[in-house]
Structures are given as C-alpha cells and as structure tokens.
Amino acid sequence: MTDTDTPMLVTDMDGSAEDRSFGQRRRFLLLAGSATMAMGLAACGGSNDSTPTPTPSSTVTPTPSPTATSTVALDTDYLNFALQLQYLATQYFIRATTGSGVEAIPASTSLPGGGAALLTGTGTQGAVTGGAQVTFSDALLGQYAREIAAGELALLAFLRSAIGSAAVSAQPVIDISNSITGGFTRLARAGGLIGPADQFDPYANELNFLLGAFMLQDVMVSALIGATPSLSNLLYVNAAADATATKSFHAALVRSQLYARGTAARTATDQLSNARDSFDGSSDDDQGVTGNATTANITPTNIDGIVFGRTPGQVLNILYTTASAVTGGGFYPNGLISRFFKTSAAS
Image (cartoon, rainbow, N blue to C red; front, side, top):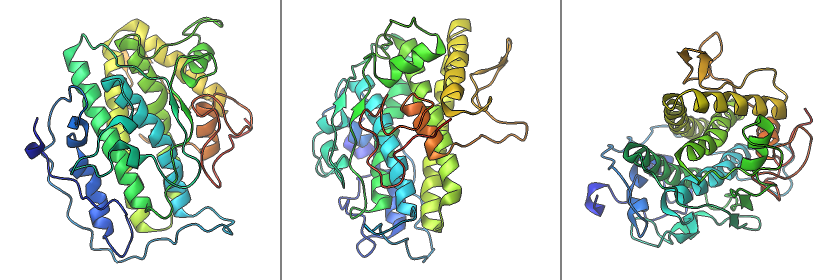
C-alpha cells in the first residue's frame, strides 16, 4: 500500500467550529484509513478505497464546551468518556500489531504531529504499561488485526476532532500488561480462564490476542449504546452513531474469529461473559459467542434483536474489574480523566 492509495488526512486537527464544519470532522473516519498506520510502522495490510461521506446539511449549533462550573454532563462529556475508552482500545491493537504504541507513530503530512498529538488534552496525560507485537501464524487473522488497528486509530482521531481541541481530554494512565493488577489478568481470573495465581498475557498467542480483544470491544460497544440516548445535539448523536457502527463491526469480527476456533475458545468467551456480568451487576445481559452447544451467537442481542447498553458506571465496573464504587483499577490504574464519569457503580 502506498500513500497514494488513500486520500490525505485533513491537516487541521483543531476541530474548532469556526475553522471546520462538522462534516469535515466526520470525514476523519473515512480519510484516516490505513495511511496513518503506514507511516513508519510495520506491516499494514489491505487498503481503504472508501469515498468520503458528503458534508451534512445540518446547521445545528454544537453544544457549548464544558466549563468549570457545569454541574450537568454535557454532550462533550459523554464523547470524552468514549474517547477515554478509545485510547485503551487503540493502544491495545496498535501495540499488538506493531509492537509500538500510538505515541511512536511519526509525524507526516497525513498525521500532523504524529501519534503523540492524538494523546494530548485537558488533564495530566498518562503513560501506557504493557503491549507487545503478536506473532500471527494465521495470515488472515493478522490482516484482520491490522485492519482493526488502522480503524481504531482513525476513530481516535475522529472522536478528538468531533469534540474539539478546547474540550478534548488527554489519555489517562493505561495498563494493558499481563500484571496481576491489570485488567486482562483480573478478568481472566474472574472468569476462571486461569488460576488465582496465574497471569494472562494477551500477546502470547493468537487465541489470547482475540480473547483480549473480546474483553474490550464488547464493553465499548455497550458503552456507546448506553451513552448515545443522553446526547442532545444531533451532530454529536451522529458522531456517537458513527463510532458505534465501527466498534460493532470490529467486535463482530473478533467474536466470529473466536467462534471459528472451536470449543475451547467458545467456552472461554462464555467464562469472560459471566465475569463481566459479575462485575457490572447485570443478571445475564452479557453473552459469549455461543447460543448453545451447536449455535453461533456472533451478535449478542435480546429477544427483540437489540444489543444492550451499559451505563458509564457499569462500563467502569468491568474496566476497573470490580463490583464496587471505586475511582480506578484494572485497565485504568488511576481512573479516567473525566469530570462526571470516573467512578464505577456499586453493584
């Protein structure tokens, strides 16, 4: 793939209303594509020939940026909550496919400031612990993984642009290692995938990588579904819907790959699903990839064919790996950088 295969990114990442229309912001998801992954990183697969989405005709004025005196969560607070989760997902897939983090992506004409520019914002920017390149003996899975990584990176840029530079929050401290206090090991232990003294390394092999992706992507889809009804501005609703669609495709791809790997992988998803239910207090909303012993369950819907959503507190229960009301832990040792969405729910 060459730079000429994909349209160039808009170079102005300011995101201010007076400089750019929201239609331009929406095009980040389509314009970023795989090109940003090719800048100095290893082995990106495939190319994106998508045609940019036409600029929306809506003239709705964006919701004002949050202020220090705001007592009610604004649309930008909800999108920043989604952004905080997106930092985690993007770092996981970028590191698993390249061996380096988002911050290592060099500056280019298609990504001004490089990957480091996608991690800044209000609050104290945190570092990422863990991450390693996965050895993909399955060439097709490797291609899928690189496609998801490129999409996650583009979605990170898109969400930051939709929020705008004046309100965007920085990356928090993230733990994607196999440490005993990290989210991967704690979820794996809670689900019985490993023993109470064992550690789970999501980069050790292809199955572990998929299970690590399953731990994250399903939760993030439910987070977006849960948050979207709280948005009041159509432009931000559209941004959340765009992000939900991308995340849902990624989650479905991960789930289908796990189902295709047979009984052990399918059973592991059921175990992790039960662990997530135990953390967020829901009775049995979460689902693995099997409907029963012989039936696939790639899309986790209810009897009405609808995928369920979670409240921010329930999302944090899983990502902090706790059923209690706390302000950090698991994947986010110091919690999120957020005015309203920092504490998990008391299940």
